[in-house]
Image (cartoon, rainbow, N blue to C red; front, side, top):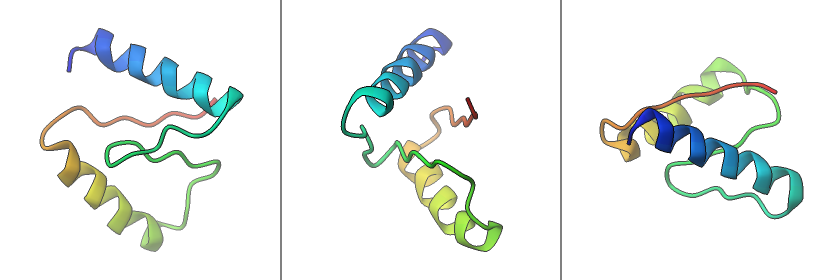
Length: 61
């Protein structure tokens, strides 16, 4: 995935989160707040494994 494709996907997900059902899937997990580290680690590991080397990012608006 190129940086441009990643940005486009992120913008699409943000728009979905604002206007309708969340676009979560095996590679996307949206959180309103960061969970405790002990609870975050298994989810983060699973997302990274599912991504199989693709870029991983997070941000807060």
